[in-house]
Image 1 (cartoon, rainbow, N blue to C red):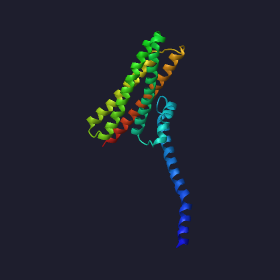
Image 2 (cartoon, helix red, strand yellow):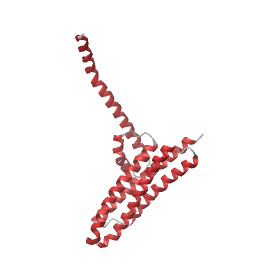
Image 3 (cartoon, one colour):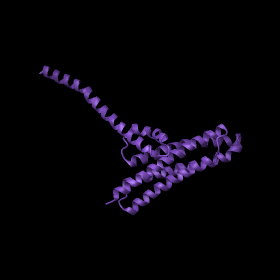
Image 4 (cartoon, rainbow, N blue to C red):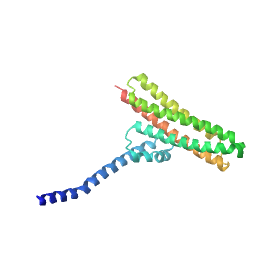
Length: 210
């Protein structure tokens, strides 16, 4: 009896590494598939390299295998950058009011635009979750949800573009260049998110065709 138990234990121990290896291989394959999927769709955007970088953290956290995942994570990436930029501008505008008043109005206007971008992107993410829960079974409902998604994301993009346009040319102070760079990043990630929303909308409409 003891010999049989030892034999079973030896078999379990010998098989254990194979089970772990198989699980790890499966997880790696899923991550690779998700990365390939993201890479292929990022190439269709205006800013493919930024697209891949901004979505890489989400590829590692879970698989992305459908247009909705792409749209949602692209929106989340854009919202993350917008919130980060808003916090930076808020800090700067507080200092500028007394130290460099000539920049205050410019940065304050930009802060207002980015605040609105944050709000619009938050609404877009909530709308995408809503259409997923409700399914958009009726054409009129789906049209309404898709229109909201496109409108809010487009507005967020316009806000960022408006801010960037206030910093024309290349010769500018370090502060202006820093602000322009951060807001430009918001603009570009939002542009990519809008492209994926269009892709998601097209996929949903194709799925409804008889």
